[in-house]
Length: 284
Image (cartoon, rainbow, N blue to C red):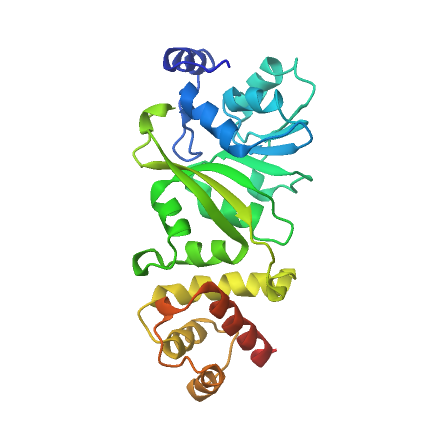
């Protein structure tokens, strides 16, 4: 397993005249043990196509290609992309794409592996996993976010990203990752997580229009987590000029579910999906 050491990584970046970009979330993996753990926990097979987000210097890309049937690797930095096109040209099962993954039409794949650019964690989760055809993923993300995803029922972790994620996916494993495993050393704590799709996606979330309404609903609602559900929805509606419901209509909607006095943070994801579906039908 050929992992670039810290010294080698700095040398290559200097040769390419690349200063790691905070905006692009560029932190390059320099720890062989973390690399091994990513590969072990991703449980790759020779029949799978893997999408990798953020190829960097190709350290992880090479190792994935030795196991998987194909690697489709995104690298937004043109300088790194050009470097990788030369360095990885001997591998016939690697496809490099110089594009913003958030704006790209993602090809068919079986798994996702990513040393996630920390500046786009939320949008990346939505792009890759919030749909009926999502697949398992092994990701390195901020520890503060992994804690929310894994323990989303706790008051402190109740948030937009936690509720939305758990409507589509399940976080099955988390492991702490040392900041020293990367160059430059991140200022945040990190986790390696394994995630899998929920066994069955709720029917309301299968269509693009209703799915986007749910994501918008949760985004606007969770800022009022200490309010009762009826008050939280009323505040959400007041901030949405496209919706025109009175407080009495909101109360009537919630009363049918007999949860009007419950605080928002006390409700589980399944209940919030049901509320969202009723609201969507009510304004339909």
